[in-house]
Image 1: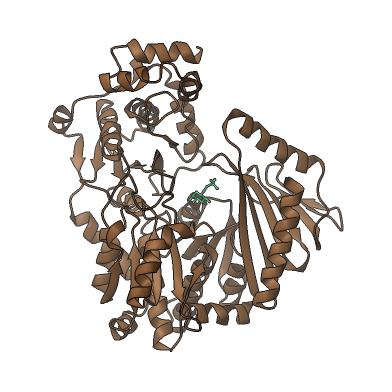
Image 2 (image 1 turned 135 degrees about the vertical axis):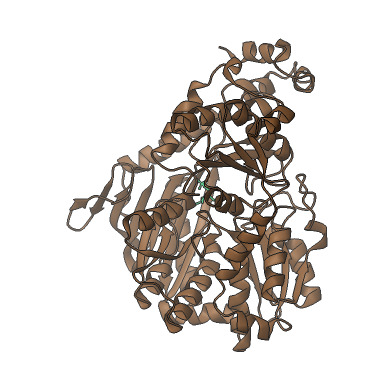
Length: 574
Ligand SMILES: O=P(O)(O)OC[C@H]1O[C@H](O)[C@H](O)[C@@H](O)[C@@H]1O
């Protein structure tokens, strides 16, 4: 059906509420806006839904949320999961509470039990809740770190990780089948409660989650000893992190925790920050200001659903603050866990460290130093979570830590998604440990560079929106496949991995082998001098992403090499 007809249907069909109709009526003369809102159904990808909040088939609203949930409900029923039920959490975004309730009522109308939090919670706590309540699936209403216009819908399966094969494909297929709103079920909340299908999760789950977090601490005695000395500035960026992060730090004994007052309260309008992403230095403006006032040792920010952590640390040499990438903060925690657990004899048998293919190569060096098995997976924390499930099912390895470059990591197996609450806690412990030795986190980082090599990584993106943008991204990937580069500046290509074709080709010998990972539209170049680069279309945003890394022998040389690699890479693609 053409988009104008669908628009008119939404304007007149009694199924849609008056507010929706009024919102649509207001754009009746704006053809472009109508087209954008109705030219397609908001795509339900492997990460679930993510889109701008508003009326229309290509928007996040109660109708598109119900429609996706009906697809999920059909799959849950096909798996006989109605008794196990579905756990639901939501963050501080606009309409998050409404969408979470709609999702629950749709599931209830399909005879499926639901367990919903009474107020906002971090995404990793939902991952924990799915396992703890023995649910078959989970939903989080969040658009993670996207700008304020967005909301989203992430789906989890019973192991607590975001959906991976075969469930992801199966759920996608079920959602795609729900094309008529008339086939979407819903019911009133009172009735749902009466039937015993709608449950609110009680507060004891928070306590159990806290206990799991605290269990990850390796040296509580060092925290106690340093509690008065280490000064921490923290911002939840108007999201879900405020309560759990403060609570875990307090219960561990940290005494000097300063929360950015302007960003403490949950607010879906994100009034003080346009892009609530700890990867963006602008998100740290207020936190750094407070850090200077308090002379903080470390400055931490979590994204709205508290699965990502960004870090700055005081530079004792010049008094300024140094930014840490996700790779760097992940490495600091990884080194600490592996070193301290090896030393105090709590390292499990057959330990494993898990990272994604676009994460720093320093992880490999650390794993090797402590005799820990390193596993690489495709981009996406769900693949790290999936490894934990396989370790348990096949009794192969014991998970000690997992990390990815995009500011996410997880210590422990109580959750199966990245957890910024545990990341904050571990990083504060590392900082306390360093301070007890007269060092900062930056000193610790320099020690690691000296020990393992000066690994440095970067990320560049090109945003290409709409149907044309998607085509341009496909064309870029096709072109570079057809005309494979033999070098990027001074770096020679030694091997090419095409994860879509499942080939790794050694350019010197011409030998081709399997990548060992599932198919994915990703190209990875192994380069001379320990460098590498990788290209993949984003799965969550209209972007093509370029990841790259080098290994230098000093801070200066790695910085310079990284710049050269980035320039050469971007020149090839622009
Ligand atoms: O790169 P995208 O497909 O847009 O995904 C963005 C990010 O989403 C999640 O946070 C995943 O865990 C990350 O691995 C990924 O980098």
